[in-house]
Every structure is written in structure tokens, then in C-alpha cells.
Amino acid sequence: MLRTSLLAAAALLLSTQLQAKTCELNIDSTDQMTFGAKELTVAADCTEVKLTLHHVGKLAKNVMGHNWVLTKTADYQPVASEGMKAGADNDYLTPGDARIIAHTALIGGGETTSVTFPVSKLEKGGDYTFFCSFPGHWAVMHGKLVFGG
Ligand code: CO
Image (cartoon, rainbow, N blue to C red; front, side, top):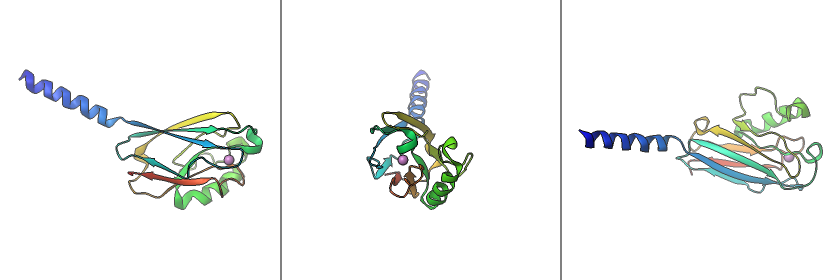
């Protein structure tokens, strides 16, 4: 009996560990209006993603601001162009836009910011795009996020 409950306890502990796995992603952004990666991969066993955005440049947020915004690829262009109209006060994102899966704050040179979101918002094999929503940036500052790779 004792052995059985120990095994059960061990199995429970193991499954708890399996249930919570925060995977960390890091990406740089620059004064040259670029991200440091064109593709990011979230492993299939992650339950949560912590994405950290570094702005390694020197230019101010109102000149060369960067954020990291994640949507389905089909939503990326409309979310970006509508976000532009939302203005600087909203970090160029429409408040409450349900198409936004996750986003960081908008930052300037020398700053770092991060966002944590559950992987349950993603589908394995789904088509996701990350981008910067600062006006004029999204057309060049974008990449793919792959889940389950
Ligand atoms: Co930008």
C-alpha cells in the first residue's frame, strides 16, 4: 500500500512538472528597424512562453519604438494597420483587440520588456506572425512563430 501511494505521489509530482513549463524566448531589436530573428520556435511541451524583447539601439521610443506583437498570420496586417490609428498613447495597438494573442510594451533604445502568455492560445502547426506595430515598422519588422517544432 505504502509503495503504491509513493508511486502515485511520484506520478503526481511528475505530471505537475509536466503541466507547467515556461519556455523563454529572447529577441533583439535595433535602431536599423530590425528584429534579431526571423523565426521563433515554441517547443510542443511548453505550457507558457516568456518572451523578452531587448532594444539594443540608442534611439528614443517616439523615434524608433519597438514592441513584439503576436497574431495569427491572417490577422497581422489588419491588426497592424488598425493599431497605427490607435496612436502612441495605446502603443499603436487597438485596446482590447481579441486578435492579439500577446504583446509587450513599446520600448526605446537600451530598454527591455517581457510578456508571458499561455501556450493554450496557440494551435500546433498554426500560422503565427510576430511584428512591431510602430508606424511604418510592421512591413519590415516581422517574423514567424512556430509552435510544436
Ligand atoms: Co519598431
